[in-house]
Image (cartoon, rainbow, N blue to C red):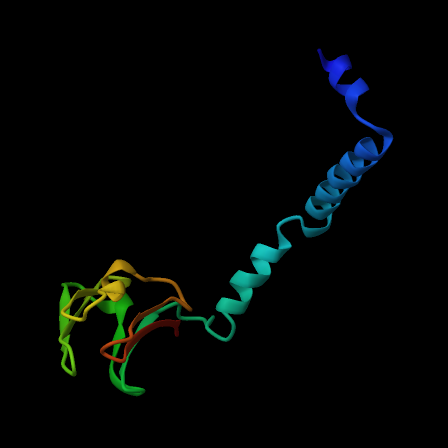
Length: 135
């Protein structure tokens, strides 16, 4: 059966197939996973330090509402943010999220927990941002 398929291919088909296979192999060889590492490095640019503490910055209308050291939290902390809509931010040890919001789309809640330097959660209708940094 394999011979029948190979016999049905024209010379141009075989050349095109070889070029595609060679291109895929060359891409894997040249990248070797480095593109993923560069994206991670770019996201964490200027966020590494000696202490390794995880800091969450909560902003409303581009003004800092609260800075929370997530590394030092022992018990759950709740922050209520008022505005056009009400949003509830919950912080636990090394993680934070939009827990509740009465905005129309609730995309902020679907983001879930964030915990790595460079992670961001946004509630656009309430103009609120949570960003993680490492101190």
